[in-house]
Image (cartoon, rainbow, N blue to C red; front, side, top):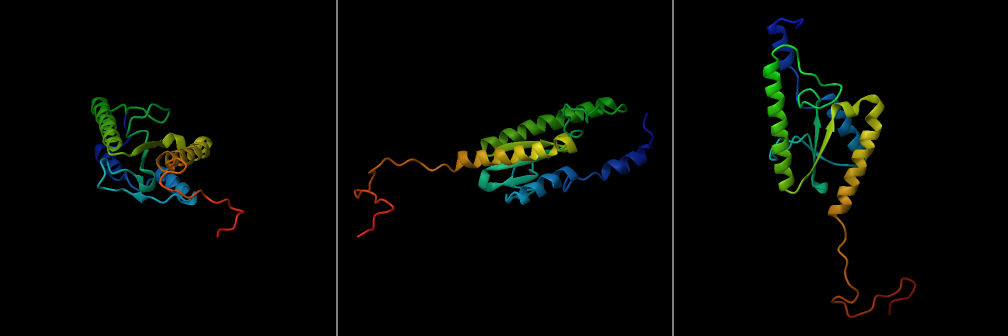
Length: 165
């Protein structure tokens, strides 16, 4: 049973923001301190990702466990108006899958960080794994192309210790 009147509940729920949330700020501060530069809330991309790292062709969504129906200890369907909430969570999850697919087709890597992963005991491991994954993505997308020896260059390369004439 809800302890609030419908008007009180409406007022509380309507004030929940989708930008600059505590979990999002944790991830953003970590990335900035690690030297990653990013854009926030790029509306020109499907789903308006929370964080966009263009250099890495990567978008990061910092999802709340409740709103996105994450299968974890933080999520439970409210006991009132259950049918509405189950339908809402299903729609949100379907939209998430559709947006992730669109972004992938556009050439972006899609990373999702869940609110429960940023709780105190798991936070550091999650953020370090995020940095590691971004480094892997960077290496995958920016690898030097191997050039066969002598390809278009007739002169043999000099040795670093040899003086050039």
